[in-house]
Length: 627
Image (cartoon, rainbow, N blue to C red; front, side):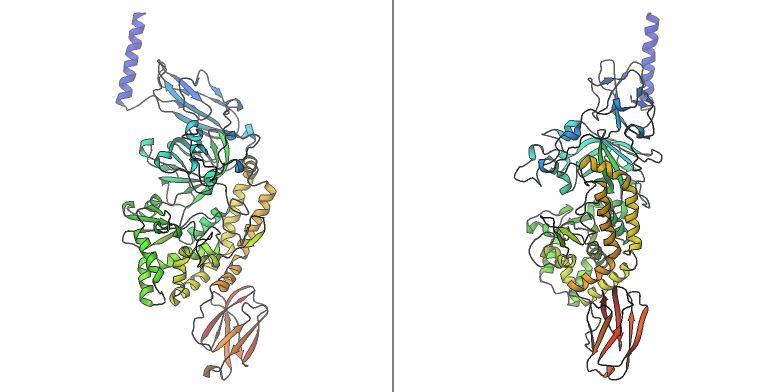
């Protein structure tokens, strides 16, 4: 007996020496990795030493001495679903909290090794399994599984997902634990990403915070995750986004299914993809289904976070010499906070200068061109107005620069876009006035303010700017912004989300049902298919089109026209005799031509489709619209 004990002691010592030599520690080994599986199967858990044992949980919590002791293989069926029912916890103001009858689940196993004294001697290993047969799950979206100790999420004092001690009944929309910010409100979680095609992805410990504004108070909250060396890995390393050169990320946003009217959940995805096609800085995204501690939490979009790390990854910049500023109306001297990164002194100085400058003076305009990237700013304004963003310009603005560089604009948050009307508090449709918002001169009145429109209004004073703006507008509307392009993103995201809408609706009551979602999506489709024509008309009504010439040798009416256009000439030497006219489209192609033979010449344009056109007479050009 003593000989056996002696051999056992030697064996234990050898194991310890071996672990020391190779830098190994105790860990739990799963017989199958997490991910998608069609049917149930048997799962084994093992540790390195026969003298140690494994304890595990199924509710997302880290194992402790009271957790289940692993004694035999686990059959992965509904008996291993979490019974914590965290979906019943009120995670927002009572008036917007939604409680479903039940929720779908995935199976979450979190396991750790304990020694003979029942002390935990390993890190917690987590694996999440989505068994399609158990809940008849047919989603083809990737699975994102987040596991955390319940107190970190739902405790009244420290939970980041609940109203908690920071909730104020007199300020329902902007108070609560979920509105707290900073590192002290970051919680340690385990995150898994599983691609349904091959179960590839990530599985690592990271930091979790709430994210966004409106999205914080709703049950389906905005979230963001942070990779840090202290959690084990410095980056999230995986090619999450198609057609991206990056496969390593420091921060990621987990954006909930959300949008303003008509509540399709697809607007921001389409807008972001379009912004990237235009060459603007914008975060790539892809839809996923989220499980929180094993419970279904609906459709989310995994998205690049457009912060200093985004700029570092995409442009290779030194973030110690970078500035990021948000929201014109929020400058410190106007009572708000805008300093996302670095300081806002240079931006504030530029805004103060714009208050008194006259950009029709060439010297002032050239100075502005030294401060901002004019071409980038033009593209940014065109995008925001084209998509009819009804939560802009006083909100959702972000720009950045290097210390010695020029300000450039980034796009984010198109949830309130792609619709040319909104609803008032009584449910009545109100037409949007995007160029009215973009040129508004009053004090703050959502979604605009004179501070938010100051730069664009000043730029419109300059002839060179308006010419460049209109030329770029025409180019983009014939290339990137055509329905052929934007409609492709629309149909792609519909195909991805459609199988998941029923589950999303059941879990959060949002959208109300699939039929409503189908109808709401048709509104987005109608907007995109007609937007080029309506966009030019809105620009003409609110900003006016540059006439290319100060001459008044001829004028047009009506404008917009429909069927017939009248050209009225005035006394000018070039028009005393018969003079040719030419009508062309935005691409410069000649569509109609003829002779001016009368002081008021009638031109038949009934074959011209709706849109913008040019008419040239005696070397002078005017623009006109066809309705």
